[in-house]
Length: 435
Image 1 (cartoon, rainbow, N blue to C red):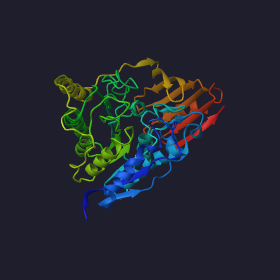
Image 2: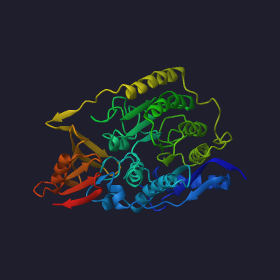
Image 3: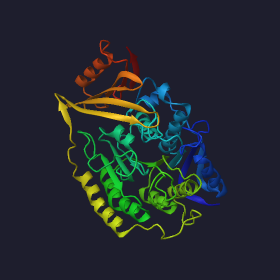
């Protein structure tokens, strides 16, 4: 019997009862071929690789991360709860030392879900990795975490969730936003006023393949992680960079994905995108699992893979070489992002479109600039489907003055907000107030 050098727990949740539509890329079949492949290859016959059932995320798990309007129940289905619960179970396996590493092969995905949620955008309702991060913090006190997002689409939701958090390093490798949804994820997007350099975007040119991706990991991502020294590394493991994916334009292979995970050494991986259901996902997922377990993955190949056929051009590799230097500079010498200020508050005003549910949100974020703590955050939001609502967030290090101001804002029954939600990380209080 083969034995895995590194024990690996795998959580499956195909979400048979949820799909955006029967023919949508994000549908039930996404993980069925992967399940068959794992059993055909005898993955679970390897000692040290085990399969586990997901948990279910409760309201408090989601409210640690998101302002859901009008309620959690209105924006989060049972499948979304169990998908997030699968990520939580992966974290539990690692934190309780049941497995050295864990991979949550779950759907629906989550990395386009932002701090405020009115509905589905980019196939995502709630951010399952971010929910997992806050669960880890709440239960184990770990603060310094790195999230490396390797989905082909920019992880704009995760970026938004962690934008003001200096203790989470968020790195997103993705196809250049000038060529792909959601049209963001550029080098200058590098963190909020008190977390400059904690968001790192790596926009890669279309048709980047194994050589380019692995160069970025070795020359940009790993040096940054070595300096940041996270207590945990989480891979937001999108697999739509594959050369056969129907909605992207990259040339990554199953061997490339496996090598990426061998280099990155994530403690926890969570599935995000990947829509080549037959041609890519079974082989990519198998390669990732073998690499995470420290097993030989050299025989993993897609049936149509031809070595050298998808090699990058010299111009593409020269562009990536220059990009690696720019990425390192964005981390080691971060520039202060442009920030509008009104009195003691940093202000950010945005319009956010929920492409799946056809909702347009108008949002105003106010971050208190306090010299004693990280301040607190007010998010004033309304959309085409709901009247103005208020989100109030207190950070874990909130000073007494900011704590009092934030709670007063939440309790103000004379305001014009239909619903207010409290996210108090200091006292671990989470709840709603209705007008």
